[in-house]
Structures are given as C-alpha cells and as structure tokens.
Image (cartoon, rainbow, N blue to C red; front, side, top):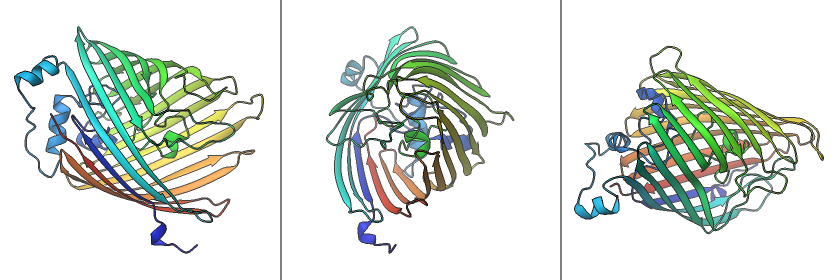
Length: 382
C-alpha cells in the first residue's frame, strides 16, 4: 500500500475547563507514586486532583513554580468553603482517517464535561461526571461483544464514597471498573476490548485498601443500564498489586473478573506491571478473556497485550514508544498488531501539546491503518 500523507488521521483536541488535569498518569511510578491516592481525590485515579496533586501538576510543567490556589469570599461561598472541587471543560476533536481499501472519514466531535467532588464531612464524599457531546464514538461491535449505548447526555460517574480512615475507602454507584495499568487512552485494546471504554459505566460497590507496598480492590457490579439487549452483565472481581522490593518504583498486579449475562459469560485474568527508574519506565499488561459457550456461539478466547517504554528527557516532556496486540479465536478469528510513538509537552499547568504516530496492521486482511494525531489541551486552574 502507498502511504499518502493527505489521508493521515489528524486529531486536534482542545480542552478548556476549570480545575485540575483530566488524566491519571501511571508513569508517575518513576517518581515513587505506586498508586493514585496521593494526588487524586478518588483512589482509583483518573478524576479530579486534590491540593497536593495540583501542586505536583504545576511543578511538572515547563513553567514550574508553586501552585497558588485562588482565594476570595465569593470563591469560598461557591465552593462551600473549599468542600466542593469541580471543573467544566470543553473538548473539540476533529478526525480524518484512512484505511487500506476504504474511503476516508472525517468526524467533528464536541464534548462538554462537568465534574464534581463534594466533601460532605465525616469521610463521606459525593462525586459525579456528566458529559454532553454531538458525536458518539463507540468501541468496535462484534457478534460476541456489543458496545454499550449512549446518548447526547451521559452520566459517566455518580458515586457516594466513605473513607473511615486514610487508607481505606468504600464507594458505591456508577463508574468504570478498576483495571490494570489504568492508562488514560480508553481506545487501546486492553481497555476497549475488555469493556473498559468511555461509555462502560457500571453500577458497582468497591473497596480500596492500600498501603506503602500494596493495593487491594475487590468489587461487585451490575448493569449500567445502557448495555445492548442480552449484554447486561453482573459479577465481581478483584484487583491486587504489590511493590515487592519496597522502593516504590516497581509494581506488579493482577486483575480478576467474572461476569455473567443472558447471552454468555466471560472470565478475565490480567497480569500487569508498572516500573519506574527515575526518568524512564515501563508499563505492561496482558489480559486473557475466556467467553463461555452461549445460546448462539461456542466458547472462545480473546487476548490483548499492551507495552510502553516511556522517557522524560525533561520533567515537562514525555516521550514513549509502545505496541499492542489483539488475538481472537475462531469462529471470530481476528489478529491486530499496532505500534505507536508519542511526544507530550507540558508547557504550563494550563496547557499541554502532544503528538502521536500510530500504525495498525491486520495480517489476516492485509489492511494497514496509519494515523497521526495532534493534541492541544488548555485549562484554567483554581
């Protein structure tokens, strides 16, 4: 196939909001952060930052300096004397894609998000994420696994949490399930193919118990309400990880999940690792999902693999190379291999620019997808 640069996928994402950064970064293991609870309000990460996390967010930018929170009588009033942490952000994304043997596509998507975490006192907290968007981008559809539905307005998170002590939290409500290396890209195989995509928000109860060298998260879940007919799952699982050497730079973990639905059952086992060595590190995960025989299809196995080598030449500059692999057994035989190169620069705590080059190849069909992504993120910080 001749590679035509006019058919490269180009993505421009602009985020404008109030509050902390939108993503959880598992690369923080290089600095000795073995889990998300130090910087994030939620121990699962990926949400609003606490005051310490906002300070780290500022210090890791090119601008640097100390984080200085906004003050004032009206701000204290609207934040309930700083008990409410919230942000509002707008995301606009344009995509132009080309695949071997297929016509190009172009999508302009706008997304508006409101996130809130309210401290109700005595260790009780309510948190929510509400999203409105003009275009939905669902994960792939397969006969043995259909994507969840969504609409113009989507409730990603609605959780009531109780923290009786500093290293123990119980949460109940609607959210994404805990998972492996917890990378922010929900489109990678280890997320999208294991029902951990953007719209996969389930009703659940989960417990976070962590220490200097461990994290244990058992959970039970039921349908989120937006699944396809026959695909509403119920079940449970546990995520457990440990720092075997006690240096807070090496974490090995396992995610176990058992889910049942009317169409068929699935079992997931997913070992993963986060390794950090000062300015560089490694993220890796390998998930094996077994689907039991159902009314329409026989048993089959799905395998997803993710690996990333990352390096920070500067504290504000992230570079990485990575690879992915997907394998599905007959009768839905599928093989996909992908490689990617990423560069992300934190110009300031309010601004980040990024570049991603990705190549995906299907050895069964011979099709190759080459993509180029440019990301610009802007925000305001209170």
